[in-house]
Image (cartoon, rainbow, N blue to C red; front, side):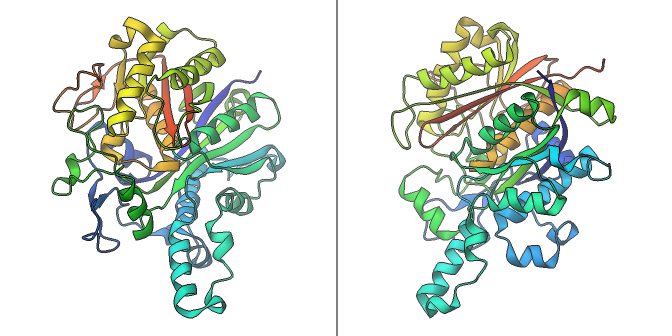
Length: 413
């Protein structure tokens, strides 16, 4: 089977636009969480989020794309431009029939939904935009990317809540490994920061209410954690068969070697406290990668900063790795970025690949008070230099969806 490598990365995140700024922020423990500025958050229990810093969409997107597309699709397109430029595939004569796109979002066009719903309620059906439906459906991101770059390979959208872009990357990986295509564009995007979505998550009591200390609110595995931080952004990975990439002299960040998935079959929002299904997903990924538990040197944890998730993920890691779980470096980059929902797996895959490439474990910031039920090495507050060969990235979503991706450090032949 063809080996699969990552040849391009594009990031739009609360801690920076573009891979260099994103990675520098993670290494230095910079938080992207602040008080919400897009609307007045004062009526809400949670008033903080991971908003994108100011940047010019028009650098990459046309006026028509900015006008017609929901922000989630705008972010997806912008991140993909970054990744395509990084991988140098646009400038080369490649077989567009053998390049596909699998792109994900957990919610899709939330901002468009809220805006058009208000127009409908205030002024009736004739005022609803003809772009309403295309703007909100999740597969629009994949379709738009294909249209923009003329890619005629396999193309679809993925929705599995916070595991969405993990599934997108995993399925794209399989498309290349099967020999069906040479290159896949995979990733996820989310733009959920509207009043209605915030109200919904607040009603679930899922979000942190540490409103007076936004930068300290996301604190995975810390005893004082009180909920996750809703964030916006997008991340795109260019996956390519190793032979194809090396033949054209492409930049190679790392290798993806395994993909495992499972479901809790337990509850629509809460994880199964046994951790059995999450452990099953991790084991399947290691089996798919044909490596052993002792090979893993780093885990980029799902680590949401919620009471249940962090405890259950810790339990799942122990089930898979046994006593050796205490020797593995673990971190949650959500402590800095907040939770990008359907885009989070892709952003964290990028972070994991960079950790392998540069030999640096990003920290879990805001780790102040140990929790007896979360007692592993979470790389507290400061990045660690560590050469590692293999790493995994976990993502778990509402509905019990679990995804684990396995990455390997790339070494030139």
